[in-house]
Length: 269
Image (tube, rainbow, N blue to C red; front, side):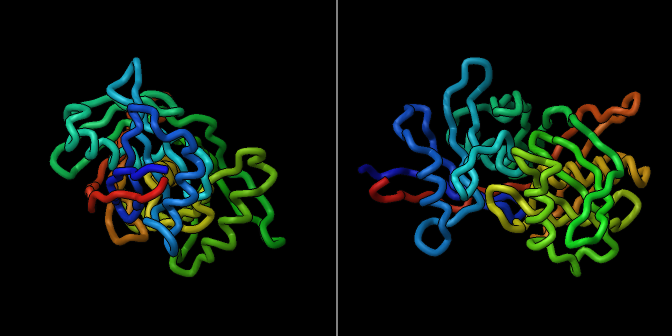
């Protein structure tokens, strides 16, 4: 048993516990995530971000959801961990982070953090699935992690947890499952997004890769141009930049503010 230093961080309503594991002292990261993310009996977070050594980038980021599952990437998490890396002098303001989804480039300007995500893939347009005997028109894109997008007229009336949980575990996306995003058009180049996140198994106040998924699908469906402003459930805004070349999305960036909330020690880890 040992004490573990950590930093609590938040980006657009997504909150994370960041730990430095470059010395490889923490062996059971899934168990740590399950214990630390419990909002009733521990620190509480949507997930933990683990900093490790990397041979090809400034450092490696591993992402563990609150249920202990490991995610390939996290858009808001990458912005938090980049701000942490600059603050702790692990990396300079322009850095490259190694992730399971591939290397990503990040720039930190004060508390404003802009991350270049891996190129979107596996896009599927306009297919239908039945949920509660009702057809849902959907599109799908992997923005580092899988996302299914459904357009709605009034986002505040959507039962995100109920419908999202059924989409998340639908056989169409087996075995990994998917995140589920509900998108409302809010203006010329503006959308509102609510996301049900797998691993958290609930709606979160924001999802970076989900905001990107919503923006890209909206760009195609509604002719939106870069940057697209994303209004999240936290009340904060994100910006998604992209270039569309020969029908494909390139140079996709997510930009928004992040902050380090406090530092602490978790006892008897």
